[in-house]
Amino acid sequence: MYRLIGIDNEGEVDYRTARGRNLSVYRALSAHAQIVGRFTPGMEGSPRYLNYAASFHPNPWVWKNAASLNPRTFRRRSEEALRRLDTEYGKGSFDVALQIFGMFSVAGQGFPVALYLDNTMALTVRHYPQWNPMPPHERREWLALEREAYQRADVIFTMSEAVRRSVIHDYGCPEARVITTGAGTNFTLEPQLKEDYGQRTALFVAYEFERNGGPTLLEAWRRVRRELPDARLWIVGPRRTARPAGERERGVEWFGPVSDREQLRSLFRQATLFTLPSLFNPFPHVLREAMALGLPCVSTHHAAIPEIVGDGVSGTLVPVGDAQALARALTELLADPALARRYGAAGRRAVESGMSWEGVGERMSVHLAALAARPRAPQGTPEVGRTS
Image (cartoon, rainbow, N blue to C red):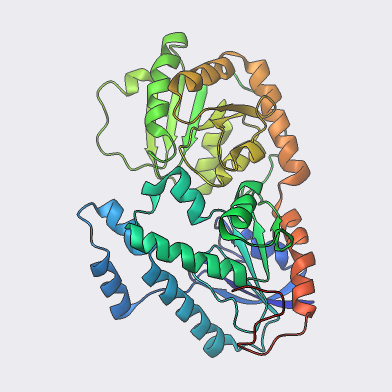
């Protein structure tokens, strides 16, 4: 059994008990490897405050995003990750490192490194650049750092084919080293199939309302209510203190952030369908969670979403930003319980057959074990046939 160290952005929590978007990958890999530890490299003290000062923007949302992702944070997190590997673990205490996401780099230091990606900056720039509001010179610098990290990695696992294509074509990585492993669902399957699809309730769950198509959904919902006056829309995640006048009369109810997993699961159980009309969401795990609970999904045809939701099979995909098409799709499923049931059952079957973290762990472990068994190159010595 090989020894694995994990480096990610989930914070200082115990992956065996905590629930996080990607912590499940460690639990899956623990069936194949000895997890010697995991940690999140951060920025503390004066570097953190200097970074915030250098990233200042009058808009707090822009300021937060600019301070989180920039070349300064990339380099500082990389330095901190390598420092902690040396001082807290020692490079002889693990056989391979698994780095989740490309916001720093520990590759090229004489030990095997695998990356696990759900997105690339190239995809963000192409589809929704306002998500990471770097000035042009910083964005160029970030892309160069990201390219170096990807090319130095021994293997790159991607959640989707969309990200795999980006890593190969946007960053020049050899196809053989970029492997789509998918991702699992963080909701367990219900013991029985969902039967009731007559509630006419649509559920939306996402913290970032605008990026996930919230305004388009509200526009579409007005059309839905003209056809189905009793339809309800539940919005979970966004913090909204001011409600537009008459929203409740239009059947819209805002729940705000819901951290209790059982409460959230109850909302999924009571809904007829799940909708996430994202402008850009590279790999929305929440769609798989909805499918695991038997909900048909209405989402948009972009990024990895068509790899998750089968259009006309487990849900309906519409063009990004098309409120009219979204309204038609929502109305059709809310008005037709038999169709909603058929799509919901198909989505559950898809999750059962190939959307588990256990499957991800098995696919990854084949390559991680091979890396762990490979003789290490001396530190600082480039490997034959590798680019940097």
